[in-house]
Image 1 (spheres, rainbow, N blue to C red):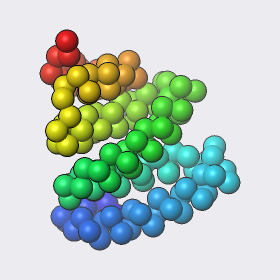
Image 2 (image 1 turned 90 degrees about the horizontal axis):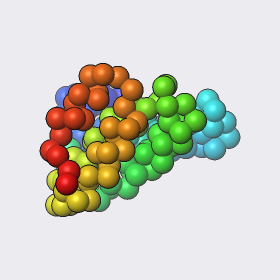
Image 3 (image 1 turned 90 degrees about the vertical axis):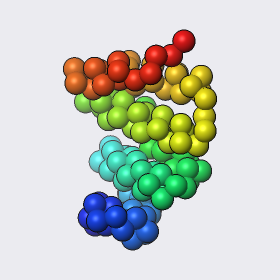
Image 4 (image 1 turned 180 degrees about the horizontal axis):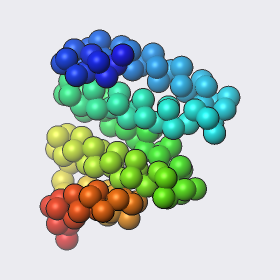
Length: 134
């Protein structure tokens, strides 16, 4: 439902639904991480994007950092299945940080991590087109 609200630019309603879903998935993931950890990370990732769309970069950063923690753990255990999810979330996190005024030096390690995590050729090419880090 959060995605439906987001797609119609009803970001406040999307945040409300995604916050509820994230809370539910958090509880489910703590009881059964194998089954629900990915759902929690995906929902939290979407929540971060909604906060970013609403120009609340502080909340967006907090939510995305939590999602990235889960995606990093999943990708560490299974790069082939979760590397692209991690890479995509890292790219969104870079955009969030840039919109919050972070310097390129702060985002370069994240872009490098995304490049390492990416599994698909299309995503690898997208990351390669990002501004070069020195």
